[in-house]
Image (cartoon, rainbow, N blue to C red; front, top):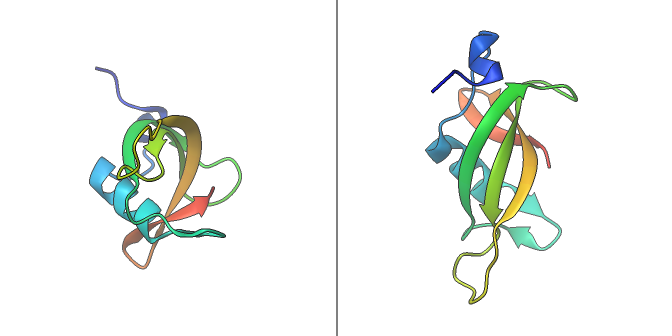
Length: 88
């Protein structure tokens, strides 16, 4: 498997666990996504802000029946040693 564009560019990127934790801490207008599950795809150096933008497959609430995965890019930035969602 080849390295993601972020790794190839020498830019740090979160692990899947770190990215999932960041999404679960992130607050949307509906509140936190405490039951979100996430699969991390390729990450590229952030084009909009600091950090990286990663393709993800996210389920907003894995406890709901018929919860469907969404494919979406999410930006992550390392803040004080912890990955946070930077661009939703």
